[in-house]
Length: 488
Image (cartoon, rainbow, N blue to C red; front, side, top):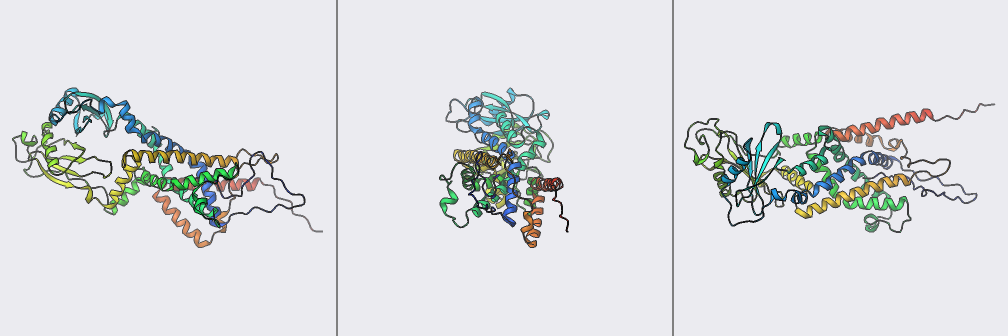
């Protein structure tokens, strides 16, 4: 991203450009056609969208290290002081959680392994999507704490997630993050093209990849750091843009529709039980057979369900989904986000302890796998600490690129006494007139298509164009025209 342009460099602020006596100043080279149009788009998009990107970078940096924050703040709830050779029956742990939290509907259980506690979720109507999670020491069966969670996330992680996604402004706040994701790739690709064009005639690896440290202080030096840093970060920023769009409000909905049309949505196990395969109370703890009824399941069946899933090959950390009646199967799903990702799922009939359906991550459509990997990478979980460090580098680097961009805008300001200005002037208008008709036609079609797929790219772009048009009209009307000399 950039707020720079290919406008000829102005003298540094506070200095005047000396002119040799009797020498006529040579007009500065002006960009025309595509280059000038890209410069103007890059400039305005950088100036107006950069604040959204800056907020996304800072909040994303905070969210990146939530595992470490959780360990510091919620160590008592999330981990046990001492481990043992064997854990207590999972049903006993669930019973201990129910004793500590007698209200609510049991919805999910995440068995603890190693030094991690078992997490038992209880839903209440007033909590909406959130739940009360009770943490149990798997080795002693003692409750270590309770928290209000969002899909298993701690209050702190949920708070930071909301900050990054919507600034705690609800649906309205989600527009900011979607604008940032919708424009980030445009700014990155535009900046790469501009930097490549600027180096024409002398494109060496050193000039492209390393800042020009020999440049004097001023806009040239700032632009060098801005562009080369953006080049090094480009691939990572493009990944962040793409993955951020997948769960945005408008573009994400279009992405989901596209996946469904291509039959590439995330598959799930079928939990519907039919016939006489399930007992009324669930598991071999119940003695009823025959047609299903809507009786409540027996939480004690959880051990048999987990054992069945383990026997069917589901290893590692898992989440057990508890059905609300006996006409629905229990689900056991792997929750490993670290590479290699584990997302196998099974549906278990608790009356027979048999798997009635299974979906393996290996069988997911390719686009679904890419989406899962991308989301994990965006959240900093795919490669563990390495992933977190890379995200932190991207966030800090993007912040520097944005600040350098604004610095260039300030450094380009006119400083002569008769034409001082607080900021640099934007690139000249009318660049589109220098482009071929066929290129304009193709460009309009492409922009309209992208604007439809990414509404918060298209709507701000339309706003830019309208505002630019209005400003141009106002300036033309305000500019006095020279009187026409009369003939003699």
